[in-house]
Amino acid sequence: FRIPDITQEFAFEDFDDGDSLNNLAKVHPNFGWYFAAVGKAKFIIPDSVSGFGGTLEDATDKDGKQGKFISLKFDLSDTGYVMLGTHLGHDTAHYDLSRLTAIRMKVRGDGKFFVALEHYKEIGDNTFRKALWKTEASENWREIVFRPGEETLRDESYQVHFSDIATEIGFFSIFIR
Image 1 (cartoon, helix red, strand yellow):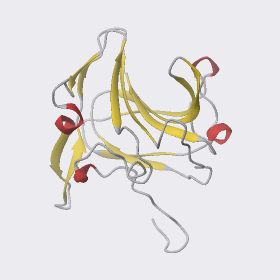
Image 2: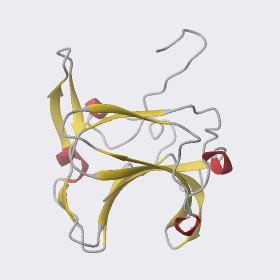
Image 3: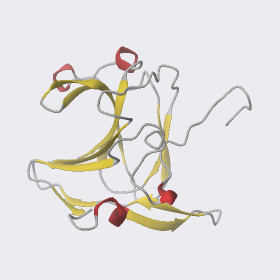
Image 4: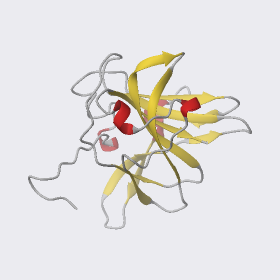
């Protein structure tokens, strides 16, 4: 719940606007959402022609409110994963999100996925330290809340405590397996 003048919410992405820019990017320009398939995985939607616009679909929630959501279709094969993400600004831009208490999103689907807030400095070939949360989608729409302190940690995958990078976040990413 929200307490006026005490809690704050920020809608990071509004798919209803139809553009590929998150709401921070409208203030600090960047390149919008990006999609990548790794290993033998491949995207079906978006395809090379439709791009981001081809991923948006219309929906009506249980209260009758209409809106858009991003819909992806992909083939993971046996050894791959797909990812989507967005820069929070120019490549060297970063934000202090140390006061962040939660990330909320509504999802449905049939796979495991990881949500990451990534540090802005590259430490390897397109590799960044990241606070990573793991969950699984379900057949019906549900809201998932990710909280700092509940992240998944694996040093070999550059996963760190949110507090280690919270003052310099440069990317929001989703990895789907």
